[in-house]
Figure (cartoon, one colour):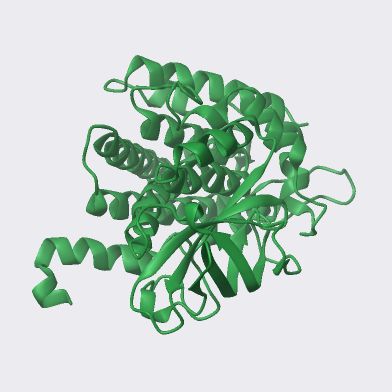
Length: 409
């Protein structure tokens, strides 16, 4: 493993307003990522997706240090006063080393816990300990072949019909994180074949009639393995409804708002890593007899990007704090955090590649064996602008609040 480059965040960013518990959690998360994720991260970023390529070593290593318990009360986990802020802070630290494992963490520790808040006490007592310990992976499923950002009950093709003691579910979900290794999935389904409402169901993926598809082969985020979930006459007990029957859309949207804040935090982690790589290159690469960083263009550009990272970090922290202090929606702030942080990640990775020149475009120099990370980061960063609601959708959410739904639609 290569020697870590210096972190500009340590001398440029000050956690003035963060709670002490969050500052301490960041330090613990950074140490855990160094121990359990960093040794595997570059292999994770380059391996092909298969049912056996999920990195349990990193997954369970992070869990062993308590990072999966951050979103939960003391009954099951860390019992933090600001759990959403803490979870997003951990997400940023993970994304600094591996954007795709941050996506795994987002599903396991943001999306799924948001739905399990609506589970019965018996289900929570049964399942949350396995989630927190990393014994079992969990999945969250709303997307289908014909619906993703445009999520409404009417567009859902997966449906649940009432049956004795529960529901019979048929349909297909697509791009589902952790599906190839998960034991359970929180799934949004239409209430009835032609219904206009939706249920959120907790489905045992070992149930008869469940089939997990072949893993998708993606440009990036190869550690965040996705695959279809196909359901044919799958029985789901009535007690596995999350929230009220027919109110599943509100459960899903609440989880997605939280997920967007988490992805905004992941964007900040990627942007910070790209900035650090760029600064290190500006300091150590010489052109025309002087350091590359002596060129005023790059001085001003990196100063601007450092400022934007501070803005992006503040956006996700504010959105998370709003949820932790009682704002049930934080919708515009979540949209801003997601759109701004993920765009910044893409911009900064692209500029870091430009600063590195041919080295930034390379995975490895054949003659020397020297490796470079930016190629992986470039492949990974793009999906951040797409999932959890495409950035164009986030701009529409902001515009609706700003201008008014009666005008924007």
